[in-house]
Image (tube, rainbow, N blue to C red; front, side):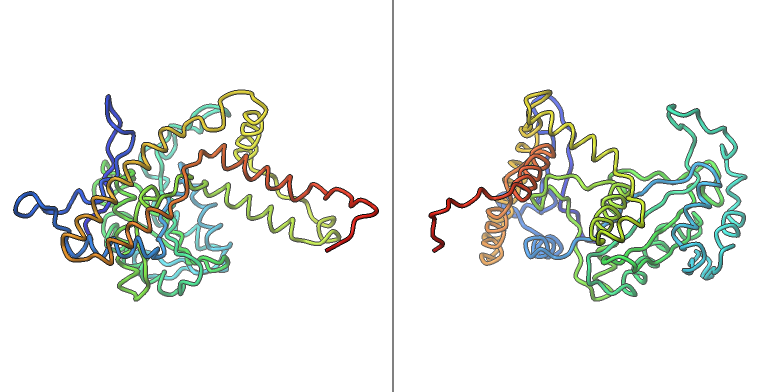
Length: 362
């Protein structure tokens, strides 16, 4: 596995909110000179070369067998797609999800029969499964994604946690839905917990597995790449995609269909940004100082990386690093992004003023 490029540090008194020490794992040579290893140099090359980034996200998890069953039926498109299990069997048909839930013994897991909380109360029941998505950008061969996902699942969960996966190719970016049982097969009190560090390690591993498949892939924190916007949660992506698809229909087709329900999360974000634009609540740039501190830390670490590369005789790569940093967009809060998008939309919808009668076109 390649050594990681980013190191996250907790905020404390007198410290930056987030430190991304890109060269923290480099070795110090004679006189304290930083020496980057081959793995780190290759990581820098991929990052400044904007190699496609892998994506791994946890899209939730069922807390009762009914929810798990419903998710499995969603990912296998109600029996239309094959479910590949950890024991090498491909399950087909509408009953595949039911058979899998029974085979995994989810109803016998600890806490499986705890009552569902009342509406509005926090659900404190333990998860029975984790729903994980492994994705690659548009144009990646789907069979390569599935092959890498199989190895990823085997290396992390085989003989410990039951799992099943389904490849989806109905969207531009091929992705694999991986459902993993939380309870350990031989030590019931041992459970699978997914933390931020777990996701970072998984991303690096999946990127390496994709490269073994001959596909260029990278895994770096978004802050290291100069991105400040947080990715939207999976349900929000689904709703936004459905809304765009509905708006793309012609007038007659829209009349024959019900519009998808809008995302309440995005609606709240937009209304909050509009309120700030009118002078209510916090200003649009509230939170930008923290983002800027992170960017400053990233820039400083990239500069140290460039200096180390030059000392190691890699001046061309050092220059690429500096150009990469120069091309980073200025930091913006989510509210500022929404306000800018709102202004652009209004500008497109505002009709041009009428031309004076005596004006001549040039």
